[in-house]
Image: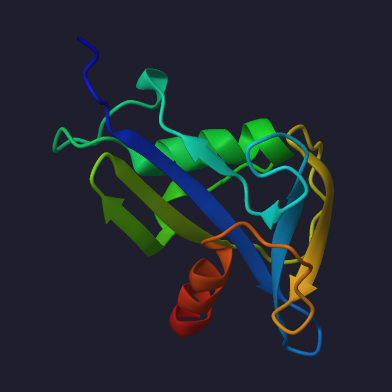
Length: 144
């Protein structure tokens, strides 16, 4: 008999401000299923190598940092600066999104699971977006 396992995942919204003071976020256009051709942030599933926090809970932050490196080559130089802005807990599904402020709009060193990327203002978001991205962006806006 197969046992259902809970999916644990995490992502990061990289953000900064333009010279005019507008909030801008880094989005990528997914090039793989299940979200092919939809715009989102780097993120994905927790892996055993991501480890656990000192309290024994899954390290969602480590998963988010690893995914951002794998998918866009974007490194988080100061993990303590990651801010939890959004989470979803459902039966057998847990996902957390963190924000990370950058000093400027840096270009990702590489993109692997995206066909392209863009820095976008909240008024110039591309479509279509992955399902929960709009609520994650609203959470970022409330917390910045």
